[in-house]
Length: 264
Image 1: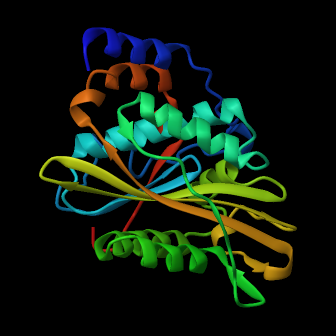
Image 2: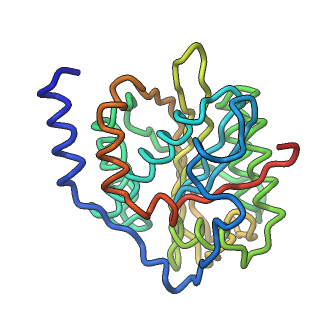
C-alpha cells in the first residue's frame, strides 16, 4: 500500500457515513464494568481463547491470536457494521447490507468475497437458532474454530435474557420480524490472521432479544446462510488503525462486550 492508497483509505474512513443504533433504551450502564472491551488491554493472554459481542456479531478467537490483532478484528468489523447500517436496513435489506459490509472491510485491508447466501432448510417442525448455527459451523469451520464458537454460544446461553450482553446483541441483530447476525472465528498462524464467518439473516413471526435461544416454528421462519473465509493484512491495517479508532471513539466501549468463556 503506497502513500496515495493509504490516504485514500483514510479519506474513506473519515468520510463514510456511519449509523450507530441508539443504546439509550437498553439502559446498559456498567455493561463492561467486569471487563472493558479493548482486548489488547484485558486479562486474556495470547494463549487463551476469548469471545466478544460486537454489535450484531459474535466473534470468537482461537488461542494464539495476539491482543493487538484481536482488537483490530473487533474494531474493523464494528466499523463495517456501522457503515452497512447507514446504507441499508439491516433486517429487511440484508443483501445490500452485506454488500456494503464487505466493501467496507475491503477498504480496511480485509480480503474477502461476497457471501453466497443459500436458503437453509430445517428438518424439524420447531428449532432454536443456536442449534442451526452450530450445525452450519461444524460443517464449514475447522475443529478448533467450531470448538471456540461452541464455547461462546454455551457461554451466552448461560446468561439471563436481561443481561446487558444479550440485550446488546439482540438490539443490534434483530428487529420485530427479522434478524441479521454474524458468527466469526479468528485464527492466527505464523502471523497470518484469518476469520471464518457465518453470515445469516432470517424472518420470523416472532423475534426476541435472546433470539439465538428462542424457539421458532419452521412453518413461519425463513433462514438464509452464507459462509466464507476472510484474511486481514495487518501490515496494511496498521496504516489506518488510528483513523478507525478515532472515528469509532467511545463506540468501541459501548458496542463491544466480553463474553466470559469457561476455563479462561
